[in-house]
Image (cartoon, rainbow, N blue to C red; front, side, top):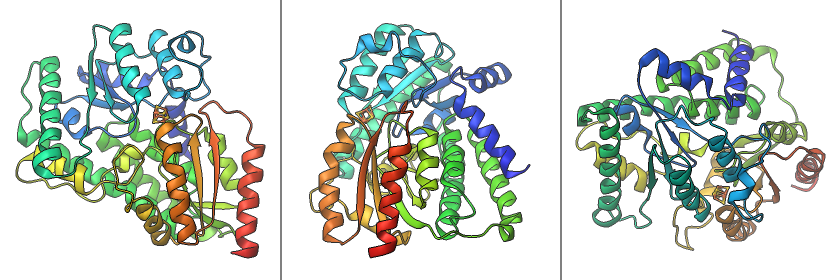
Length: 386
Ligand code: SF4
């Protein structure tokens, strides 16, 4: 398959707010699907239960919000409104349950609203440790995962064995490795993989069955390497984009950033697909392996506790590793975690002498000229003055 055809398929999955892929998968397999919200859930457990994990990331600009606005005050981000609209319009009826990871008050409230709107569905608010000692936070997280496993078992009527979980850990290790290979390739040769393509490829992990997704990434890599000689690098500035780990930016915004003269060499979009760094152990107690990975092998992001000394260290390392020349803070309007963390990250970048610029968006933003002008000016200023 040609790379363009793969991206076209990813774009149609991205735009399909009626979840046709999920409905067809359920019809074909006779199994259930569990939706989860950003940022991270242990998808391995859903997979081990024989279910399809489905990442739900709002509705972008594809849905007019009519009833969704009635559930929330006006000064919060957009993703919960479009999510409610998806639920009340029946578009999420094909899901058998929902997981709400603890990332902010908005998601916690959304989980309560889902319990009243979709009262017959399995709904779990997934809490995560903010204490990273194995005997405290680790135990707590394993308890949370056992609770999730018993909820999933009630849905399927079957126990989920340790062997099945170890197998699923292996399957997701392979998937993350493949995503990381593409991120590394994009960083080495950003002219070969656009941010738009890589975003859509990663976004597709929200829907596609994991082995199908891994194979699609392999096919894409093979396809672009075949035509690599015909693509020329441009004189763009290398940037890391950060702050967009939950509500996702509109596709046109990603294009606008690129068209303004930036090569995006790393980002935190669809972060759940890359939340764990490296492989998770596939032997021993699988819940211990998953909790150790959550605590000791995870990315840094605003919804995880970090001491003041640590703030910014991960981002600075990311800049160095990707040989980036600057950082674009790009967060959803009213996103408390991202916007509260921003001043601390600004300070860390200033101290490290790394240039940055900051902007905001909503998933349904429709005007990108301002974005293009701001990121274009940022790229020019780096070229001119470093
Ligand atoms: S965009 Fe930010 S504030 Fe809104 S639900 Fe996500 S993490 Fe919470």
